[in-house]
Amino acid sequence: MNNSHLIIPRKLQGFWELMPKQQMLFSSFLNTIEDTFKENCFVPLDTPVLEYSETLLAKSGGDTDKEVYRFTKGSTDMCMRYDLTVPLARFVAMHKEELNFPFKRYQIGKVYRGERPQKGRFREFYQCDADIIGNETLSLVADAECVSLFEKCFKALKLDVEIHLSNRKILAGFIQEIGMEEKSTYIFIVLDKLAKLPYTEIVSQLKEIGLSQENSEKITKIAQLSGKNEEILSILRNFSKNQLFCQGIDELEETNKYLKSFGATAVTFDLSIIRGHNYYTGTVFEGFIKGKEELGAIGGGGRFDNLCSYFSDKKMPGVGMSVGVTRLFDILLKENYFNLEKYNEIECAIITFDDTLEEGLRLTTLLRDNGVRADCLYENKTFKSKMKEANRRNIKYVLIVGSDEFQSKQYTLKNMATSSQEKLPIEKIVEKIKDDRMCE
Image (cartoon, rainbow, N blue to C red; front, side, top):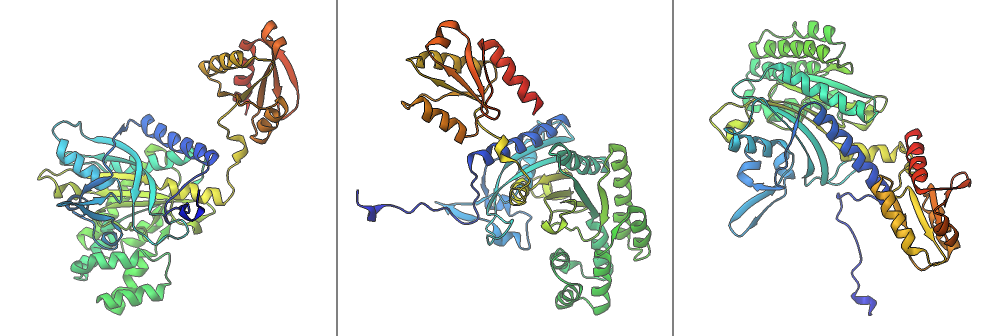
């Protein structure tokens, strides 16, 4: 074959790929989160990757529009979903007569954003979402439940998380008070950069939008407030008497009360939490790994009272949470958080010789039927080369099947880590491997 015709294998930038052991661990991450959702009475949903553009762009705004993958096929104008919440709103509006409310759903799937690839930012990534949608009304208990669920997910993953909680009505009320509501989207975009830009730069950008020096400084100081919940509430009440501003404070206080009932312990108030999407209307929160806050948020969520209004005349407020599991997992890999050596698709390799391949295959099936991840090394190689392969692949157990084992039905089980071995019937081998698994 002429090598000049070979295509160089390469991958699009910003798209994620894992090696098998990493993928096994990542899949266990997803399973753990899904189990947590199920334990808290959320039901599964899977929406299409492609949606009509008018659906996905119904209420996005800001930088989001620039990141959407949008294209046409024939006369159909469509987009790839950039999150799982807008498709949820479309689904609920379409099926509102068939659903039970509050509708508690979870979805785990890939989303797509045309961002510039950089550290921790991907064009294709997984989101693990859980949302609660109400019929006409939705109690702030739902807000607290989603924040609490977020904390539970990380506890299940054995990660120490700190949740930063706020309410967008507080800043929206101040913006309303100073008569800049028509510029609110742009103001929120600037304030959302508070963790990345210095105070003076934030103030400067707000002045460019049209705020006075005084109001630019005041709203920036509000957005910088963070700390003990009761102290923050006391400070906030002195900033403004605007009705929307005060409503945001009251909602923040009530949500915090319910959080205590849910047993959430990792929550602190942080007025800089805004969330980039324009559909958030009240509660907003983000999660950070304790001691590694510089790595940025690894998920969050909030309240979206008006999202479904673009698809239905019926008011269906909602609140949700999302774990940015791709970003989280990528960070943990780079931090060498995992011991990948203990993850293996094979628990026990069967090695045959003396024409015992068929017996080896029978034992492989028997082990698998009894819950042991077994594989027969059936390629026509020497016994020594097969043992080397098992050792190279860090397979803990090798089951050796020769003519003596075949006749006696007592098979040699070797622990590759300790080099110890013993002859056992297959029932005892299953028992031993499972017992050892439980002790790991």
